[in-house]
Length: 295
Ligand code: SF4
Image (cartoon, rainbow, N blue to C red; front, side, top):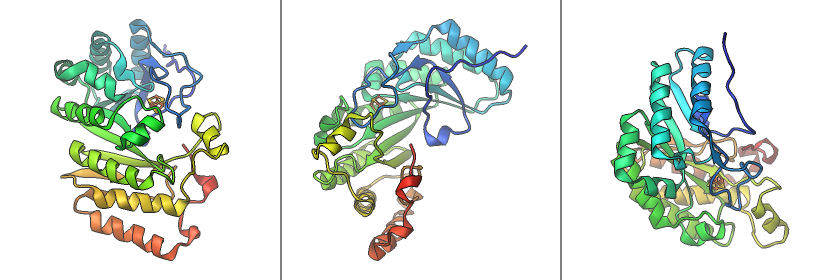
């Protein structure tokens, strides 16, 4: 008899994991304080029982035989104990022999706490990819949104993932510095991304749920969001400042006003040209309508 996979609450995953089997190794986010995020506000953070995760893996394998990709949720599942993650990964590889990629969300501190030896061990038992939410390379912005890490910690964490032999995808958020810090946000985010030099980077655009603390700051006039065109100009500045060696750069999430995708550095001139064309015309009809944007 085929069982079912348990999911508690809303389950979030990166856009590129849309076709992956998703298993919750943890529930919620252990940080849960970023002012722009309310994904896990209604969940009490905890690591799930190993037996429950293993049961879900077995049931998922009977529901999705031949699955090629697995994503371990929730918010920062890498925070879980190393022995627990090793056991989850071994079970996953055993019940899904066809897996080509296992990925996980991680916070910078989770990566730094694990250290190189433990990260390498996780890579050896089948963890292939880590998604890191940089959000901004500006310390001013990181502090303002209560990200709980500095730009330098982000750099160390990103480099550690690469050194451990895993793929790294770094996410940033356009507009996170508002009008006040837009230039600094673009400049410093490009700088930090360039130092990390990840194989994948994604720029989403700030979209606030009314439950997010930053939404209240907007209502109170304490944070001035960027206009769609200013957000696009920020994206342009960010791409212009990127000095990476081989990075698939995407800004084509449902939250973005203008879908953009390319491999840097070779596609940089084409991406900038595409953005400049829209910026020159200043025609809002060329952008995704506000009501069509989504998380
Ligand atoms: S942005 Fe990431 S680290 Fe911050 S509260 Fe949301 S899930 Fe947690």
